[in-house]
Image (cartoon, rainbow, N blue to C red; front, top):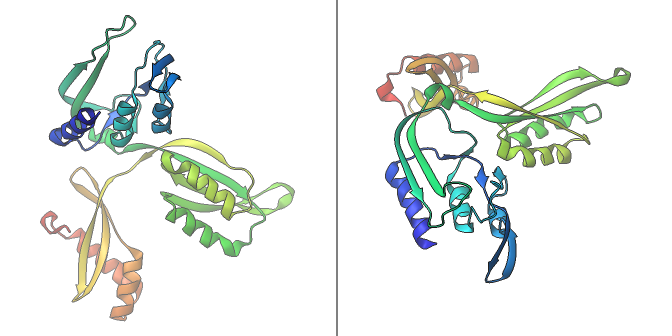
Length: 272
């Protein structure tokens, strides 16, 4: 087990991998005998380690995923599913010691450069609820709680419900891994007793944070978005803008425009 864990960690470090993606895990099926007697396949430890991971039996009456293998996958894989679009650079294949009649007992590793057009597309979930009986003064704290809990975005949409009641739809955009926590937060922080969820694809531009100086000791962070090498947007962080405006004694809109202009004219070598 030590050799497996250390070898996997050393290999990922040696290859310089930025992202590890894996297909759904084949666990095998049937029963296995170990130190604790007869246990079902997949073993309890395997299932515990693979909570939240897509799995399937593989249709083979043997143990196909050990607890050590499950631990390595759970600790290193950040994306599950089909092979991502990439330019293949190297391929490695390792064979296990057991010869199975049903399928080759091999593990394949494909290393490549991810397709830039596809790298910005990530799966996400939108959670929504219609609410007509919550004190409107509470909504700012609800949105703040959602963002603090890992939502990518959260917003309110005015609607009119049955019987002519004015209401709002609260919507939350989040990664799939944050869906359970944010669903629970909606139930706890609002009066809704039901939510709906649907899967979406999120596409985002490459972005970076640069810092511009408006005066000695007065700095504003600016989020710069790109398509390839072209800058297409520069948005100053509004909290920094408000703080800088207070220090300089000028309107916030002046600081906003000045910071955006400075970031737009900043050469790439000056990025911070």
